[in-house]
Length: 285
Image (tube, rainbow, N blue to C red; front, side, top):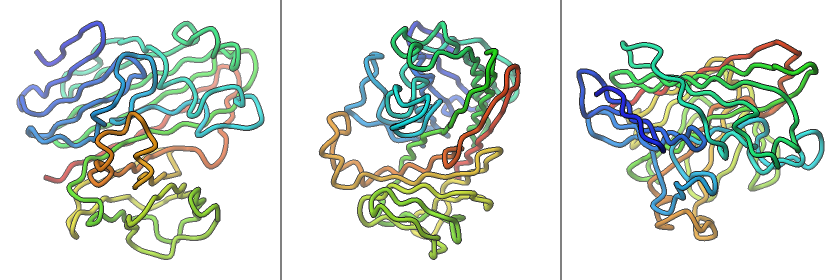
């Protein structure tokens, strides 16, 4: 079966490649696994909580309507990264058979009363996932169903599985403005290849080039983006030990988050307006 549907998750299997699949948890519409020819492409912590009690540590968590933790403004009462990753999404069904495409939806009726009180707007999120031979495409349509305008930020918080973080580099970020949350400084990226040798938590703004992840000089992922101008690079390094759901703690050596988003500024939607974005990841085996 190309689509397996349970009470907790959805599994998509490529029609002609049974070892190529994607698994989506209905809690947060969080992609947990993406396999290409049997090889896992995403990192999921062994300590990840999958029972809906908290956000998932790994895969592709969805960030909306705020990135990080706001200290002022209309999203200040929301938890870090908003409520999309904390809510139970609806599976809307198959959109296309070739390539295999499905859609999920989220609205105020799916959000807890406590969180709706903090962000009391009408909205619809339509999340589309496309599984192809060697690529995974995710798109989000954001619709303002309110009678007033509101602002939002959005991001695909993708955890990539990698062989060895010390041999990994990210290209396509040279010259971009950086907000560095570790050094608490702003600067322009001077390096053509961004490498990881300690904790990294950076927002790269207005990224115009295609972004690639390399391992030992060979490209292993190509990331293309539409309407997602920013890229976040994150690895907790030794601080993984402080995260109860990041296990084993040394697994920071086998992951890197390269996250496509629109987070350096706010997007404003007027009543009845909509906005769309897409990320496509190609795995090079």
